[in-house]
Image: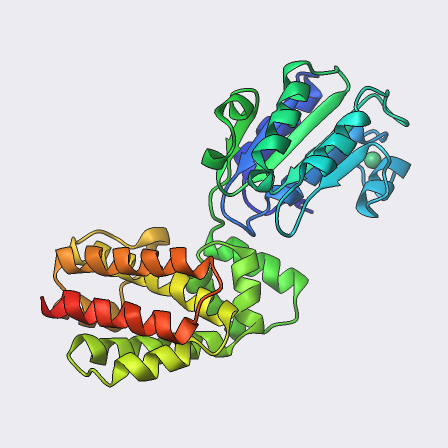
Amino acid sequence: MNRITGHHLILEQLNRQVQQDAISHAYLFSGIAGIGKKKMALDFAKTILCQGQDPPCGQCPACKQIDRGIYPDLQVISSETSIKIAQVREMISSLAVKPLSGEKRIIIIDDAATMTVEAQNSLLKSLEEPFSYNLFILLTQTPEVLLPTIRSRCQIYHFKPLKPLEVAAILQKETSFSETEISEVLAPAKGSVEKAMYLLNHADILEERVAILRELYLLLKGDLQKIFTLSERLSSDKSKSQEMLDFLILWFYEVSLCKKGFALPDGEEAGKVHEAFVKILKDEKIEAINRTLFEMMERMKYNINLNLQWEKTFIQIIKIQKG
Ligand SMILES: [Zn+2]
């Protein structure tokens, strides 16, 4: 059975390094969320640490302990918000000691870009003077946020979004959603299993997106009442607000691609709704609208009155459209 879905080339290259005993001491896996970077890192770790004949055998004590998350020489550092200096220091203090059970200690840092600069600097020292038995795998969606000095010490692998069929295969294997349900989220998930799962578990979001677009279209046509109905609708809670804002930014980006005659990302087909927006928007207006949405995104980082800020955003958008 295939251990990893997609990313065949990367899997092959990493396996070859293990076979040829040519592994590096630091790796950076970059790519959007939910496409298997961490899975690949764990599989790579298992391949290196496995004590069986055909690594990763899945049967030996090392493989089994890794699966249960209790292998002593495999550390996974992560944080919901940001990886603090204390976490990195604690990890570093363990590095000078030889691995307990094997020849290698593997440290996976997930999502490395959330490390504070202080934490990154502290990690850098370990990357500069590596002990032969320590191996780092950094995972990130935004490699550009990492210090260049860290990036330059890593072998970098860029993970592309999965193909719709690959996402479907994973969801069919790991969830109980029907084929039809799964097929409906493949396009908006844009190659991310995480995003697809989110959409499957929030079926109302797709309907809500269509409804929001309908209202926004009417607003752009001059129905000013929509400023208030849209703002109210979007500000019911912050995570929904954030979700919809991300969606709208992507939406206008797609509309601008259609306008210029380019294909949509991931080979998606432009729909009737795209075309409707293309008809009523001029090129430079799409750009200005997206700038306005990005400003809203900046403001969302703070504790703001969502309703008021959305109103401000829509008033600005209508000004752009009329001006
Ligand atoms: Zn094994």
